Length: 441
Image (tube, rainbow, N blue to C red; front, side, top):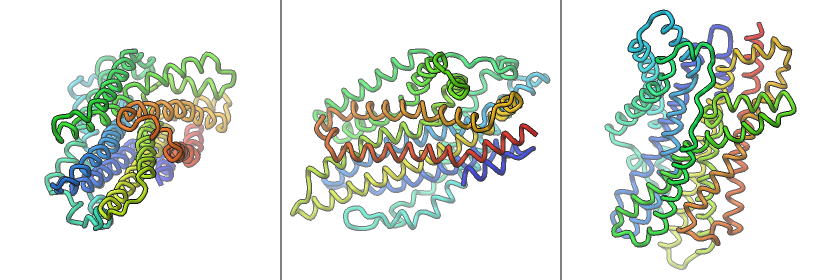
């Protein structure tokens, strides 16, 4: 569906529409998923018995695995089609517009698109409330009233999405405001510092330490906070380390490239490592979650069945929670892949026009595009899974992580995530053909 929308928007004179519809679509999906996650988890906090504490701990882990990636996806949505927006704003700067005017226009545009998408997302969430209420926990459905968030939450989430868009717009404006010629002449992107890797490794080490001392925490609230910090922080720093790592790998690939497609792919990554990361960042979150899901399945296999009905109910609820987390992760990957790949094609119209004028076939362009995505994808999937295993090691031990059931689930989830990216590449090939045809004409 996203690819078809992008295909229609790739016609002449529709660049502005593409720059608007794609972010709105992304914000709508992000808002709807975020509200669904929060609505489903709120019921757990109403259970005050001893068993309720375990459900709350599992809810914190699930929220960290889903909410942090959703916020990251929202930030990526705020930067969709940023190059085209920067070009327009840089033109205004060259015509004499003041930095304050440029900043105000950029922030206003981003906030309006975000709010429109967020309102649509609220509508999608409200339409899905009856279906969410059918999910069973503790032997009974949550109910529509149990997953319906209060009115203030339905207002606060869109406002938070709008604020995120405004912050992203301000951060992305620094190059335009300081040097509009730098944008118009396509100067090389600033290099990323190796401190990204140092900070990321430090956060992962901190998460490992928190998991190691979790059993001696003085209270339930402290345990929940440590779980949220360990899992949420580890996922967040993947966005910090990822672009630096794939940039390092792409530099080596550019030096060793022996075909036009390989060279073009490597140069595409080096042009904007952050944009390349956004193409595969969703799978990074899925890879992290895969280790959690695999370990959970291994735990369930060890526990087996119990004559205690309450224990059987808990095991069934854990299976349900794992399934919901996996499905939510796949939805995020599908959203990220479809929107970012379509936006990437539309934003590179000038490049495809130049390559077409030089005589490069569209098939070669597509081969380079696929390699520019699939090569970082392999590094991302493996690196994220290893990071998750390190964080969970003190909590589960090696035996559960490498158990056959765990490895099978991890492999299946990773294969599914990579498959979604591959399908996104196939689905957006017509967008590339249309963009190349339009620019060539």
